Image 1 (cartoon, one colour):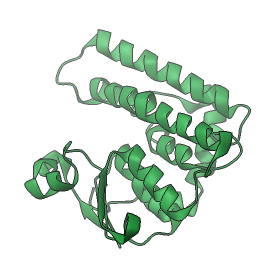
Image 2 (tube, helix red, strand yellow):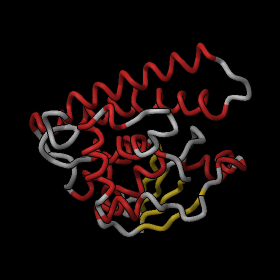
Image 3 (cartoon, one colour):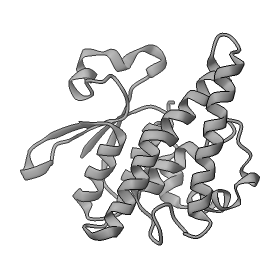
Image 4 (cartoon, helix red, strand yellow):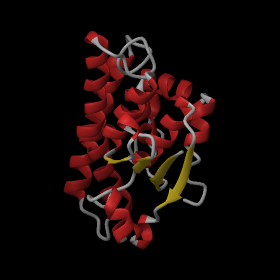
Length: 208
């Protein structure tokens, strides 16, 4: 059984949604980042960058255990382990990977900064708020353009790219985005929200 070390953040929810979609058995080990548990020595052995999520799969490549951190790497690993949600080869595979990298390199980090300066910063910093909110809107526009002609982020098939993007879009109110301004994103978000596996995965961990 895969061990999932996680907390109730968009990055953490990516992995629980993927595990639910793939039907892989897993056990949840909450890591309360509000209490600094991500710095515990035992957790650092699995995730040396002291970030959630991380997994430990006792049945890794060649039957050997493997520990992984970084949500994008974990998504690729789980998809390849099961042969689902990531095409094995060809242009379709690279389209999924490019939209996964879009999320990892921009859509997550920039929205995370918007969350911080709009919700949590101890002082109001208009320059930072505008900078990250403007970039958030630009990134939503990129996703809107793609989804206006495609049912899913990487084209015609649901993939790990959608799983990576969805938990961030699900928090659109946190970064002050009105989805009515992005109708294709709103359509896509509603369809993913209706998937039973997504609903189950978004509830993990229950204690967060």
